[in-house]
Length: 269
Image (cartoon, rainbow, N blue to C red; front, side, top):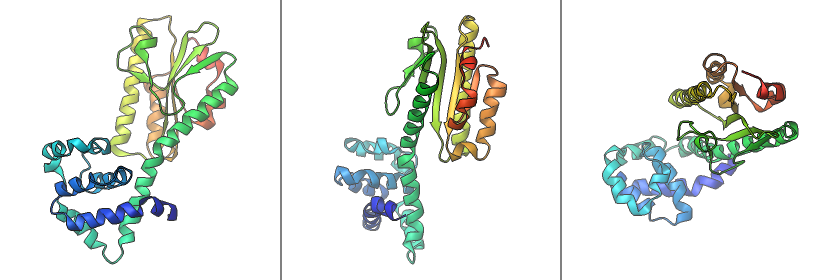
């Protein structure tokens, strides 16, 4: 936890100071955006967590729009007195309030990086195991996803994919896929993820029906504790068994050797 404190302690101290001295939550935001850019981001993360869960940090970063944000969303800000009361309740042991929140912010900060690492591991595995017969395209880290309508004429527009696998000899698309790292997920977030994946399967199923010669598969590569705990894994298995039998695969990195094979990619199903 010492490392987490190094990252966030200064921001937490300054945020607490501003909460005590500001007259309103809107005033708090005005003071935060005056902070130097390198210090502002962590303060905005705290503002979102403790004052305005409905506004994204990216929105709050638009310093020139701060008055517009206050006008449009200020009525939903938590009252500054509520935030002060939260601090007051932990006045004898402020670490008990701050350290768990620091850990949450630290985990969120690194979640995207874990996703990039997952994609990078997958591409490396693919190149070591299937590159003789197939090629794979897509961003290995941060980068623009591939729009399916650009490579599959007639596909529903506005449907991106993380990677595309093609036959090395013919160049035909044989599979599309999505890589996700779930360090912690549940509730409505989990429901949204599963619903979104069902929608992807439905769109591909429609495309396959309209193009019987295209036996394109869909792969959901997932990893992380949020995936293997609770109901998420069972929900993903349903994607494969119920919503997209034969042409849908759910896999983790450890399952790749056994599941993602040349025979499956080229199977006539």
